Length: 316
Image 1 (cartoon, helix red, strand yellow):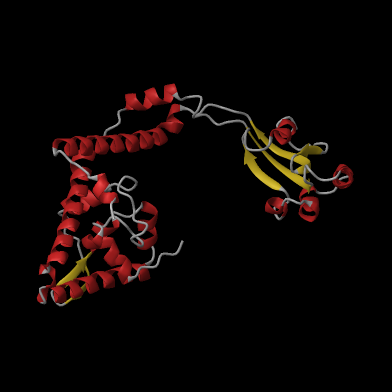
Image 2: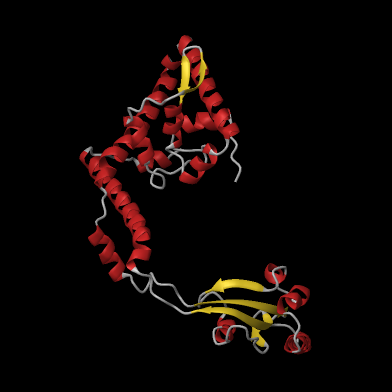
């Protein structure tokens, strides 16, 4: 995914308390991307290495400024930006441009206009609330090894690897409501293809030439790996009882007539606790963070006596 950064995007980014990366209509959600440990290390760091990446008069952008901003991005986006010097350079330029324009606005006392001042206060409150939740409330979200083990024990079966097969198919499509003559013609095509396969023709080649399944035809009919429940029952009843390397007889489903070749069969198995430990920890921590934040916000708003007048909101 290629990332493009514009001045408007950066302004929108800062205007929502650095909570979003792209346009304001699709901001990064706080609950999905909480403040990262990387951000905390930047804020508290006393490392001497903090080079200036750009300057304009008295305005400077340091490496720590960029790191602080990127800490709000999802990890994938941060990595992509760091690996692209041109985009990082664009980001530094945009930040300097914002500083320069803001200085002009202050020199003209634009920030003292009532509506602008109110919006600045909102931005400050928004950022402060996010920081407090991240650095105080979320710090209480810790998951113990006992929690991990208990979750694994209770969900061992669900966490396992289900039975799976990898299969190819050739479909001769016909509507269930089609005339009998049309169904017979489709079945005759399927049976003719089956004979060619039984005579030694390559399954993938024949699928590419004859299958009516447009989504798999170019891949030689390859359906990939799938577990029970993914395909229609009539198809699965044959596919899961066909040995790897074998070809089925003609199979009828609501889509028409199929010939199935099973290429691999993986038996169901449990995953060990060690295999699942990191996944479980991430899941439980995410859920605990959400619970802690929602609980704190609920208590704080109740203590403040928050009231929302729905009738006034809905009235025109």
